Image 1 (cartoon, rainbow, N blue to C red):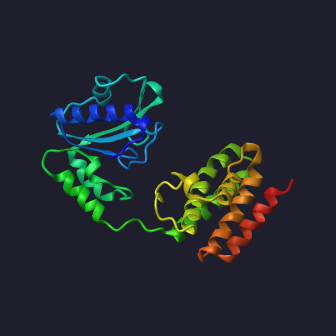
Image 2: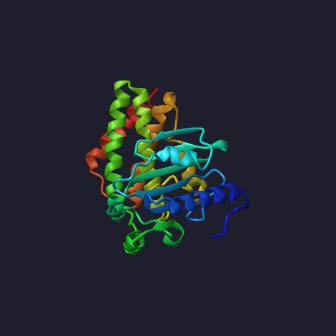
Image 3: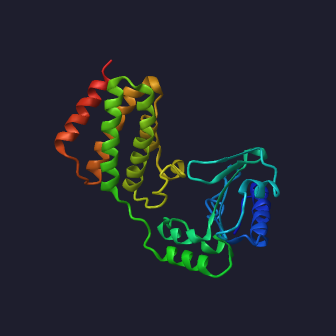
Length: 264
């Protein structure tokens, strides 16, 4: 795998971590994932790993990492993984779970999987078999109608919250709306990759007009009326362009709400 010149530090740390995983008898299986395994990393990218442990192993993942590299800050994130910040703001994400969890790999998405780069340690062949099974799954298909249906729900939610006067809450709800619109915009362009994270490389995959449309739905707390009006308009436009179904009465009500919100 060829690496950018500014990834030397990443590569050296990755090699050190992989060696430590292989040498630690408590770790029966280990894999890397993320952009570094996809050859899309740059100097701002994270390093990410899953460590599968013997069920009875005592293992402090924070202390394990601190023996290998200085750690400025470590926290268990909302998904149960250690997120560590190293000097230079390099982030390392480590999931440490019993090896009885290997079966959960079947539920992973299989976008941009490279088992030969991902597999770090496999004591009994189960990890290689799981990765092979995962890569054999059909690639994710753009479920545009389902995305639109969820987006319409978030729009109605956000417009009601905004009308109530909860501007900060309405601003937070824009995150869900932005994700749905990015996904539909990518599908409209014919992109079927990175649908699990539509913001990934969006600046490279989408054209200037689409990025301008996206910027219009990212306003601050004082610009929410314009942002929601733009989101409603773009949603209905993408729905029509992709030949998706929107209840006509709902579309009319959303337009009415958006028009009312946009009034000074």
